[in-house]
Image 1 (cartoon, rainbow, N blue to C red):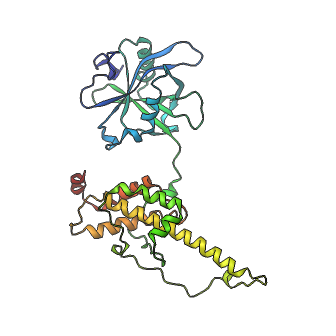
Image 2: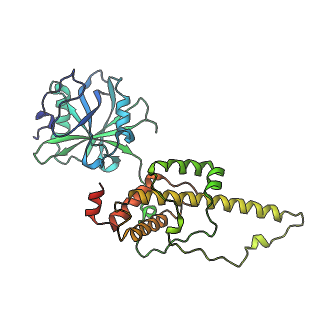
Image 3: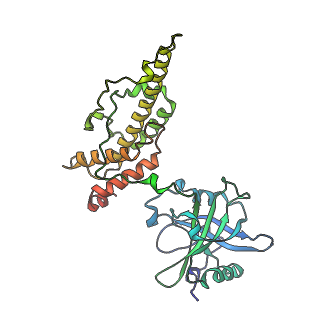
Length: 338
C-alpha cells in the first residue's frame, strides 16, 4: 500500500499559523475538518495551502483565484461539507494556484479514511467532492480532492475547483494561417465621442489604462485594407411610406450602425493594447511589426463574431494573444521576456 505524502512531512504545529514546508513559499488558506452527513464525527486535522510559485499557475495571483478566496473565506467555520466520491472524468476542474491538502499526523480517523479511499485503488480516477457552503446552488463553490502519484511512490492530495462545462469545440476553433484578412470598417473611430456616449465602451477602455503609458493607439500602424463601399442600396431603404416614416427609419438604422461601429472599434483597441503589452520582443526587433500585425489580425479574426455585438472578455483576448505569440515568437525570446 502506498504511503500518503503527509507521512514524510514534519509534524505540523497547531499553534503555528503556517505549516513548515521545504522547497518554496506557501500560503495557508484553511485549517479545519470535513463534516460527514448523518454523523456527528468530523474528519479533522486538514490543512489547505497554496504554493505561491507553483509551475502550473504561471505566476498566478491568488487574489484572482476563486478557490483560494473561497477557502480563505471559510476560516471562521470549523468544518466543510463532505459530498461524497466523484469520478474525475465526469467533471471539469481548475487546478490553477497549486492548492494541496495535508493531514495532521495525530488525526488518526482522517488518515485512515483517506488511506482507505485512495491507497487501495491504484487507478486514482476519482476524488472527494466538498462544498464550501450550506447550499448546493450556483453561488456555492465546489472543489474536488484527489490523489496524484509522485515519482517517489507516494501520493499527494491535490485540490481543484469544479468548473462548468466549456462551450462546444466548434466555437473554440483557433485561427489558421490561411484565414482571410479581417477588414477595417470604412467609418473612422472617434475615440472621444464613442467612449463618452457608450458606458460599456467607456468601462472597457478605462480597464486597459493599466497596460502602460507606452501603448500607442495609432490605427495607422495596422495595414488593414478598407472595406469597399457598396453602390447598391438596400431594399428596405428604398421602401417609401405615405405617412413619411422613411426618414425616421433611416435615422434609427444609422444610430444602430453607429453603435455597432463604436463597439467594434473599442474591442479592436483592447485587442491592440493586449497584443502590444504581451508581445515579448522589443519594438526595435526587425520582425516586430510583422509579428505584431499577425497576432492582432489573428486574434481579431478569432473574435470576429463578438467584436460587433458585445464587449470582448479581456481574459479571452489575452489567452488568444498568448496562443499566437507562442506560434510566432521563438521560445528563447519568450523566456527572456518572462
